[in-house]
Image (cartoon, rainbow, N blue to C red; front, top):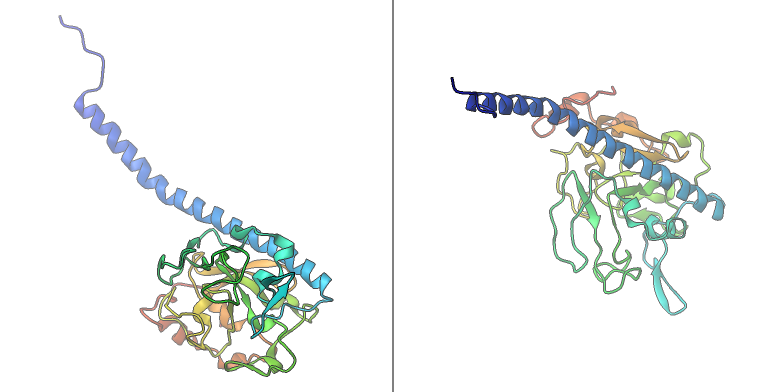
Length: 291
C-alpha cells in the first residue's frame, strides 16, 4: 500500500487561495478606513500646531492678524528681499521651514514642481505650490509675493487679515467693512482661521454658489465664489478647520455656508437645501444637512 505524499492537493490549494481572497476583500475596506482616519487625525494635529503658531504671532503683535497680500508685501532686510505678509511668511519665525506642517496628509501632491513644470491639475487632493525659484526662502520667480519652495494644502480665511488702513477693497471684497483684523474678537470659536483648502487663502461668503463637483478647477483669483476653494471632499463629507479661538474641528461641507467668515455675512443669502443637493450630479446630496 503506497504512502500518502506530503503537500497540498490542487483542490486544497484553491480552497486556501479562495479563503485568503475572501479575507482580503473583507479587510481591505476596513484598512482603507483606518488609513483615512489616521490621515484625518494627523491633519487635525497639524492644524493644532498652527493654532500654537497663530497664538505666538498674536502675542508678538498685540492681537493683530497678519496683513495678507497687498502690493509691496516684499521687504528688503540686510540686502535680502523677503516676503512678510502672507500667513506662511508672517508665521515663519514660529514654525521655521517645516514645509510639511502646511500639508493635510490627504492632500500632498503639489500642482507644480520647483522648476515651474506642471505636476497636476486642481483637484480635491491637490496641494498648492511648489513655488518655483532659484533659491528657497527668497521671493518666487513665478510670483514675487510668495516664497520659493513653499507648498501646502491649508489656506487662510483672508477675512481675518489686517490689510492697510487705506485699502477699502480687494478685488470685489469689502475689506474695510468686513475684515476681522484682530484675534481678540467676540465669538472667536465660530470664526474659521486656517484649514483644508486648494489655495493659500480664500474670501468665502454665504452667497457663494455651490461647486459642480469636489475639486472643481478655479485658478488663483479666477472666481469671486471662493467656496469652490474649500468645499472639498477630503474627509468623507468634511474638511478640517482651525478657528480663531485656536480650536480645531471637522466642518461639514454644507456647513461652510453658515460659518461666520466675515463680520457682516448675511446667512439669508445662503443657497437652499435643494441648490446644495442638486449641484452638478448631486454629489453633495449624501452629506449632512444643516438647515
